[in-house]
Amino acid sequence: MASFVIEGGHKLHGEITPQGAKNEMLQILCATLLTSEEVTVNNIPDILDVNNLIQLLREMGVKVSKKGMSSYSFQADSVDLDYLGSDEFLKRCSSLRGSVMLVGPLVARFGKALISKPGGDKIGRRRLDTHFLGIQKLGAEFKYDAERGVYQIEAKELKGTYMLLDEASVTGTANIVMAAVLAKGKTTIYNAACEPYLQQLCRMLNAMGARISGVASNLLTIEGVDSLGGCVHTALPDMIEVGSFIGMAAMTQSEITIKNVSYENLGIIPESFRRLGIQMEQRGDDLFIPEQDHYQIESFMDGSIMTIADAPWPGLTPDLLSVMLVVATQAKGSVLIHQKMFESRLFFVDKLIDMGAQIILCDPHRAVVIGHDHNFHLRGGNMTSPDIRAGIALLIAAMSAEGSSRIHNIEQIDRGYQNIEQRLNALGARITRI
Image (cartoon, rainbow, N blue to C red; front, side):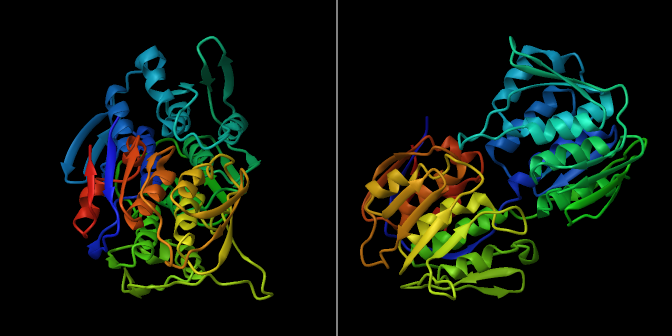
């Protein structure tokens, strides 16, 4: 198990470019199974979760060819269907949460799929009902083998239908869309997720010959087609990395420029950081964060305490609440962080409290942060990363802290952030991988 040793208190300066979007890429890679023709994907991040999914596709029989630094081609013209029922395949799926999105493409194209309960972050319940109920409505049959812990899905023919999703799940919507594009007739999905990454998936599928309308709304209409062709697709920059770098600049009182952020796809993220008092300036498609000695949390118009809460798009992504919580520890004022979607994601705050942060954990979903206004710095500590986003939040805390810190289990951070210590050290950070 690898660790980071961080020497805190160093300011950052310079430019940094966000990687390709992790959450988009997991959807896009699964979608390459929908056609026997070649699909080329650009701006692929070199991170653990994505690399594991690419390797899984190889083992499934997909021809994978590296075209450039961050570009690969995929051709699923000889998928090994026998391998898809093997214990080895199921074991690999169980360690990669993104593998659940293989179900839609496999059932749509091959009429069957087996999937084990997927792994991923330990951040509370992450139910699969939306995925399964949606694909069931299209005509698939699900059976659960309790002895093997495996879901068996079969469908002689998928047929379009109307469905109202019980929650606007991003991966659930993606899975259903990928199944519906090859179903017979029209599918209507209401309460669909409409995150930029889901929009990207729909645009890619349309480029392959799908007929999806309503993209960017919560009402998708899909006219099924007989087959899809190849295409070239380029991923968006990762909005979670952009938000992480904004928080990092504020906490370390640094001046940095975040390059090529695709500003129009950041949604409410810049405004949410501005509510914490953080200044930023859009320069073309770059984001300039000036050095700030202090930043003050806003209050609501009636004078009540500011609440930062996650919500389905175009609300604030839950993946940035951990970062915003850490940033608030050095702001002037107080804020309530309300993590609505996952009940175990705030439990990392005990590590911040040990570092000297003033945080009241109200319950598994809410924490009140009383900011130090940079009058009292966090102190270095010894901690373990429980999930990707808590991991980057702890790294930000350690970079701003007095003294040295050690973060264990950094494989969690590697799952979502590409060469993070090298990129940050180039800006002036002092991070050593051990």
